[in-house]
Image 1 (cartoon, rainbow, N blue to C red):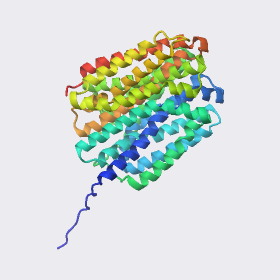
Image 2: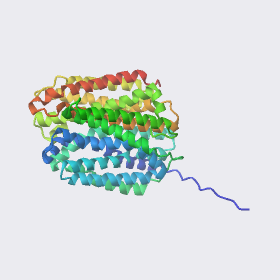
Image 3: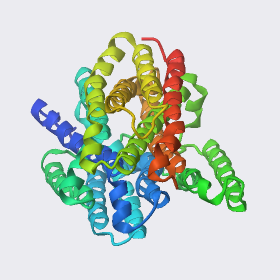
Length: 461
């Protein structure tokens, strides 16, 4: 009698191997997070080196974040279909080659294009690395600890970017912030080949190419209008055409997604108030963080004449607050639910913004450092409860999509924050930059107040 043997499931990884996988993936995630903010502190130097103004410099940051935000969800679907390790390695390779192109860019146009390609690579790293970690940790308790470490690394990477960038620029010039990525990517490629196992989704989702194109169009048009609006005029014919195109693309996206069996974005999740406020809260947190980073960088370097190293070092309290409070926030979410950490996040963020609402050219350095510390603490407390509020109460089949949408909203917040902050100070001379930036600090406070509202809709423990 003939018998057919089924392939044996892969043997579980040893504890040491599992945590090695987490370390490798966290290294790549740290690189992605740092690269979202490391460039901020170097924008004035890039502007001087390439002879461009603030408006062009905004695209150096937003070309990366818009492309990354638009492709995060489809990158996760591709990894489930083609293999997570394979897509992860491709992402590292694309990211590394694009970093090399950024470091060698002779003009602003080449730099912006290379940053967009960098965003493609980054989109293949963030969601895929998390899926690899979750697959490697079958025990729920161990997986929870791993995700806590993951969240801490993510918060640290975003806050550490300006400090790292300031040190590199002070020692080697602005191109060093991109050269820095190349050896890290090479190391990560070797470690992935040695330690990370291949895995796939149990059921690969179909690719939603029309939805992907429309989502990218909506994000690109929105951010483009925010960046170019102050210069072309908010009521100019070009701007009006942009509004119509954005509205049409958004309406078409909703129509396409509602008609597909396996949409790119599960719009049914937006019927849950806790999910909606979590997504908006994630956007608000990253708007506040990036408004802070860009306004403080321009203020310290252009209005007060600080070096990139000194202005990066000034953000150390922000990095310290985020690093200390991110793991504490995760513990609080596990014990008492997301409401209390969200209240703390909102209160500290709002207080930090209000500290600088009357900023001028001679504001006491101690007040600046206190404001940065408060905003860093708010950022540290925010990420864990927002993620919990987004996916809490959902079955596993929908939690992954909810997490991907929340990750996308964070990158949207980065792009919007840079566009808004750049629009406020575009054209301001060094003497008037502090006054021009004051509405930005009120925006930071408003983002903190929104987190207080989000806490009221967060699920109870």
